Amino acid sequence: MSHENDVIERFKPLLEPKTLAVVGASATSMSAANVFIRRIREMGYSGTIYPIHPSAASVDGLTAYKSVADTPQPIDYLYISVAAAHVPKMLAEANGRVRYAQVISSGFGEVDEGKALQEELVASARKGGLRLLGPNCLGLYSPRGRVTFVENSSTEVGTVGIISQSGGLGTDIVRRGSVRGLRYSAAVTVGNSADLGPNDLLEYYLADPQTKVIGIYLEAVKDGRRLFDLLKAHRAKKPVVLLKGGRTQQGLMAAASHTGSLAGDDRVWVALSRQTGCILVETLDQFLDTLLIFQSLTPRSNDPTREVVMFGNGGGTSVLGTDLFARMGLDVTPFGKPTLEALQALKLPPGTSITNPVDAPVGTLQQDEGRIAEKILDAIFSNGKPQALVMHLNLAAFLGRTKTDVLGNLMQAATRVQSRYPGSAHFILVLRSDGEPEIENRKREFRAQALALGIPVYDEMMNAGWALSALCAHERFLARGQ
Image (cartoon, rainbow, N blue to C red; front, side, top):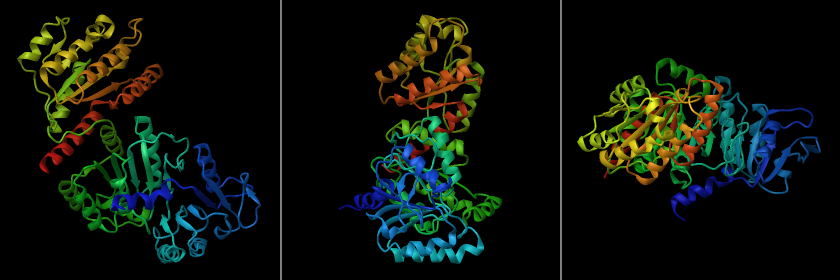
């Protein structure tokens, strides 16, 4: 068996558990463990669930057992939500019957008085023959295994693999990312990382064929050399997006009190990014926007992107977008003669700018019930050979002006042109809204249509700029290695 297959098989009981035991569920009230049982049932978990309870015959309609030693089958995944002091003894008595245990309980290495208890916890896990996730850890979201720590989470198996040292931020990543259109292969929170840590999950995602892009929220890593070696050996074959917490002195102090982490000098992380090709971002929005572009588009190492065509309604937006892209190392340069002549031949109404950015007022885009966009895009793609095209639409300008579905026709025109010129240019859509409920509803519909066709959708030019510049940086890194 290859090393990659060995890693995948090793983590399968965690991400696709057949048997799952829960410690801390109440027979009379609703504890965190009861909520966990409810969530995985709602998600469609099809394996066997064993509640562990010292006295109750059943919990949530499931037969309860006094200890993990009493369950009919060995346990792939053990969920523990009881007081910290009781956990080490429980793990030590697992006696080889548990593959993975996740400890949601806090009071371990993230506080001074819990450091010795955390060391005891790890020793007990070793004695019990299992691997430990946490403590101080919300757990994982695995659509493949129908296991989740997130309320109302999607069952759709995606290609984005997440590692988070924060459970709360892990929840934000899954929920806010899902609204943006991200679909996950898995999202694992690691808490204090007393045993399994970010490096172990990174090794898994690098090997996992289902995972196309990896996102990591990191406060610190115990073995920085292993992290560097994993990323360096992988040579950015899969994009790795890193949101590093604790990059300032005050942030370092916050990280230390959050998960007991001590992080290194910020210059180390900048150097890691440069040498391994991982993409270092600064905000959660940048993190999610960057993951979305890699989920949707395929990087081109043979032709790194630099030249961008901008097309949409709103001259001020085009000007600001051009400034923004230029600051990010992207060029919105005027078209050459063949493209200009092709656009001039369309005899577009006065007020339409065709030099790049292409600024088409609503009146222009309403021509032929919105199908004029197809002719504009076709002229650009067939003559200009753009490396990327950003189409931006101010949705409020269209609604209520005509009985025909101009916006729907615009979207269809864009997707038809994209299908006629596959792989020729990265196509990105920016759908701008003023927040009115009707416009937001239409925006959700268009976002879903576009994402189904592999077109990433952003709320503003800034979001698209962040993401596109990250894609370009990744392409340039790949090109240097060829």
